[in-house]
Picture 1: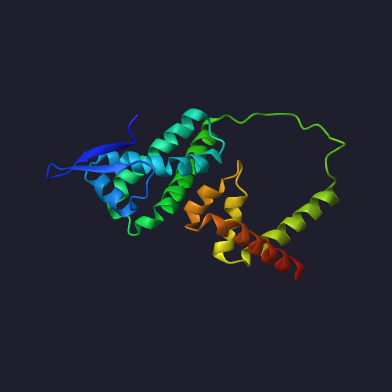
Picture 2 (picture 1 turned 45 degrees about the vertical axis):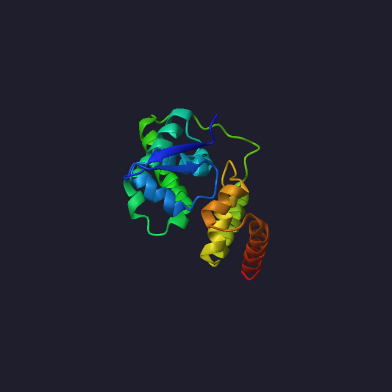
Length: 199
């Protein structure tokens, strides 16, 4: 199987965009806007895993997830000529995937009828005092979280997705080297811990 596809430029000259290479994103976006199929293939090959990682975090069914993925790439078709900073494309795709997944989740929630069930007392359920304590602890965590930098907040949100994102996807979203994620995570957690101790 060939590892590269060609694109006919306006001048009739073949332009090659090898898949899984470091062709500049700006060059791929410009070619994609002109209708280069190979540029689109290279973009999907490079960032498709990132888009799926974000979508999977919303636990959508397979058909809905596929629809969301198609919508994300359609949005890129619509906006590829208006992306000001091409190097931030991974973050743009991740944000678009998240927003489209939220819209899909809301549509599904409206379509599913509410189920009625009888509440049965559970001896193992936490008491009112335990629930109150849990709520107080949660409020402390949220208050401390609000006091953190936007960078740390975004980092910790990405690290807490379910299912978790891999470091490659987080690196693409944050435009951060993979080797910096672990140390940055430790510093952010230390900061969160210190903020909670002050309360």
